[in-house]
Length: 294
Image 1 (cartoon, rainbow, N blue to C red):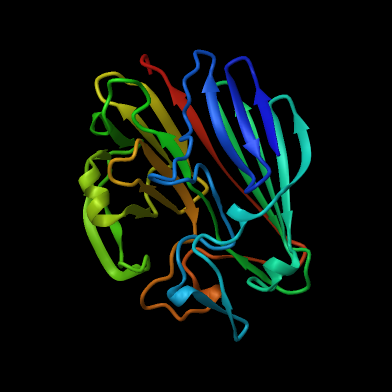
Image 2 (image 1 turned 180 degrees about the vertical axis):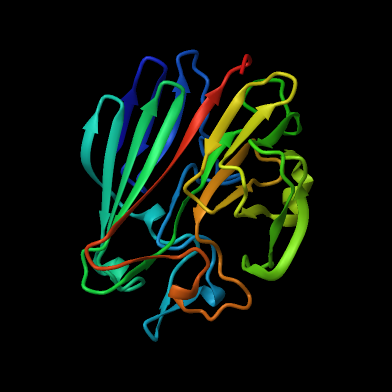
């Protein structure tokens, strides 16, 4: 089911399948979210839960038992329930089912709130543990922003600019999509990354951990329009595209792919969150539209 949201600045759409916000259009008709195209990637804005990235051999150890789970978990292919709705917001929920328990043996409640803002949108995740044992999980977003945004522009006309003038290395992935233990490559210098497809063809994903910045802008150089992502509540942020595709995924992560040297136990995954019975955790991120004037 598709849910329409609107405010004086934007109209948006949310799908109960995957719980995603799949459209953000301003009053001039400019679409900010990638529409999805199987020729490149059919995804748009998937929710990554209860894992982020790939597992080693597609499996994970939970309390001494082996469970299999696809990359980025099952939320993105699950049907959410609409729990609340207003003109400019929607709240969707996902709970355990026989299908999820076969891959992730925990009762849980995942609540997602999409809220339109005057200059963009905010997404908030709330995970609750209604069970009787600790609940481990990772969570993240995979928001595909159209890039370029306007006719006549190129992907290479855009750059990523972090709020602080910092230097950082990208973590490296193996061909199987695992984090290479100790693998790093210089990437972020003076807080800026110029976009070019060659980076993604060679590295697949740019992944940063524990940055001083909590905000990054995607801007058209010389013009100034674009979007910014506020990810302060997430310890990792990643960027991904397919070479030649007109989008860039901007991804706040609390968790990541399995590391080549890790134990394989869920509770040992980097940045895993562990909820005790009855506890809940709230995390959120925001996208703000940038105009030519700032």
